[in-house]
Length: 135
Image (cartoon, rainbow, N blue to C red; front, side, top):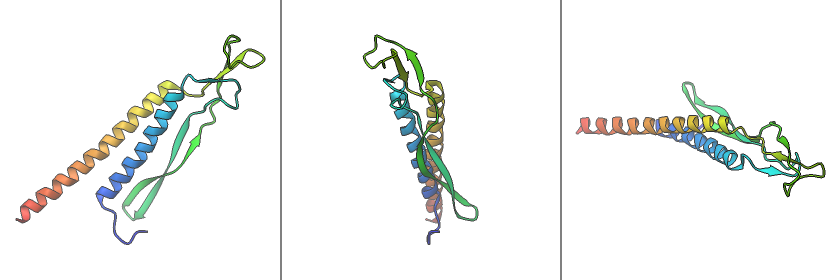
């Protein structure tokens, strides 16, 4: 537990950092969607951040990225004997990435990030209004 209480800026900032990790993972997944390899073991599998709620004190919680994990999704085997990476059976393995799910995740992450930007803007505006009232 920190000695100084977390401010709304700390909380929103940590939430924004977590969403940035999520966006980066999604971007990596999208960049690798459609890639093929010569074996199931070498095929790309989507990655996901694992978030953990962090309670600083009663009534004050935020989020931390605990780790980034590789999903258990199975790559798709496709018969393509003309492909240069095809194995001895003529098969290649497509990356285990669901582009539609990644797009939804990207939109959700972006909206969550933007919501926290709005929280910061509102808090800043309220603080400035309070300072002006004191003058």
